[in-house]
Amino acid sequence: MGGHVRGGCGRGGRGGAIGVERRPRPEPFGLGWPNVISIVRLLLLPIIVLLLLRETEATDVAAAAVFAVGAFTDRLDGYLARRFDQRTATGAWLDPLSDKIYVVVPAIALSMLDRFPWWVTAVFLFREAAVTVLRWRLDRQGRVSMPASGPAKLKTLSQLLAVGGAMLPLPRWLEVVETGLIIVAAALTIYTGAEYFLTTRHRRAA
Image 1: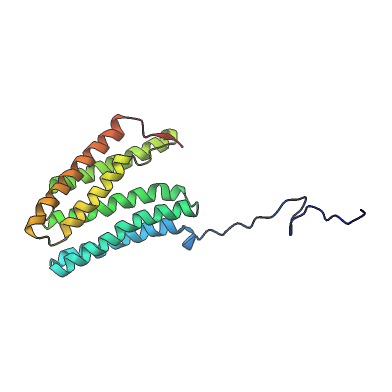
Image 2 (image 1 turned 90 degrees about the vertical axis):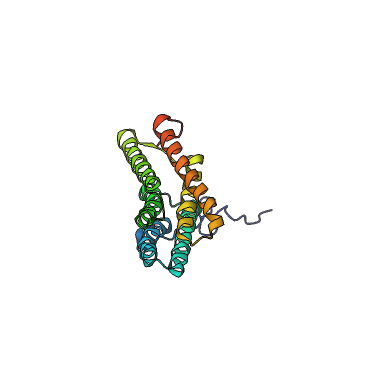
């Protein structure tokens, strides 16, 4: 009895509130790691194209290796955006745009070297440009977002495999597999483009 009861203040707190120190978010160059990684992915493209233009087996393998590293960063920037809660307006357009450019530019270079079908490159280019414009118009008109659907994610994977495979000096027995990947990538590209334009089920209010 008569004992001294300390107030319910936490260390450095007031009125029972316990101060929670927030972990600082890493934001290099004021952009955040996810956006920096998207930019780095785009900066890999000149290296990939220059290696392909050398047209030797060694440089083809090197180009495919650099391309694979860039493809892996697509998963990394998404993880970092969720891990550090760094979803930004810039990242909302920069990440998908960099993904599209990362596929289309090497496809064009390979087509110029007669190593990738021009019609498939045209399908990639037209679809990605059209969907980018659609996303921009939806955002401008009604602040409606259109996140990537499940089939669209498979489309991106198939495009990366098809373009990456075309860079490699494959043995003849694997050329059939590469042809199959190209056909699947083209089919998914057409399907997902039509899905975005003809349906509204992937549209979300921003």
